[in-house]
Length: 215
Image (tube, rainbow, N blue to C red; front, side):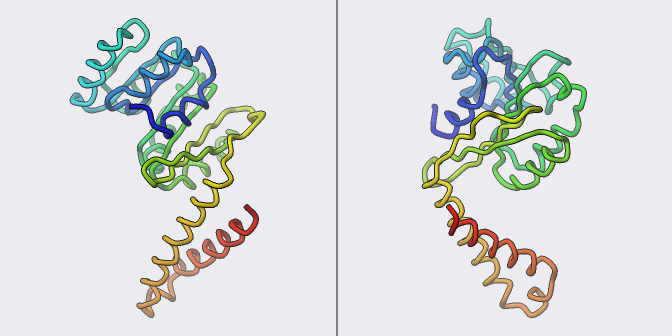
């Protein structure tokens, strides 16, 4: 139930927090937050009835109905202003995470911590956080050979940053390999080579290789 990805998310949550787990799926993160003492109250939400019903069963089996409240709804619309101090959004695309955050400024105004685990486009998430004056840090977690980024954000900078240099090197190497394959495919087309995207990807490849040398 609990893997290193979920553990990394939990490690960013301050003790005794009031947490919203948006897109809770089967409720495993919410349950672990409650059982570990990280959360004194959790709103576990999902926009689909099936996963929410599964979460309700798991929450009941764990005897945590008095701590975890399961709600059906989309994004942060399930929350009331000031109801939680920490929001977790995990397992979604980065663009969707940004869309969810941008749609509810009144909810974010009363939120102290954001813990975000984008499945892709993490650069878009970090750009949005920076544009909204939120300090952020990143941890990495590996599950079954896949490396995930977990981004924690707050209005004030964190005192420390979780790091794993070996995992960071592996993650950068994976991104380099993926970019090289994309560029190799694009290089087969004269038109593709002349596009701005090709130049951007080349520049990103150089940046990543330089970054790997410094890790």
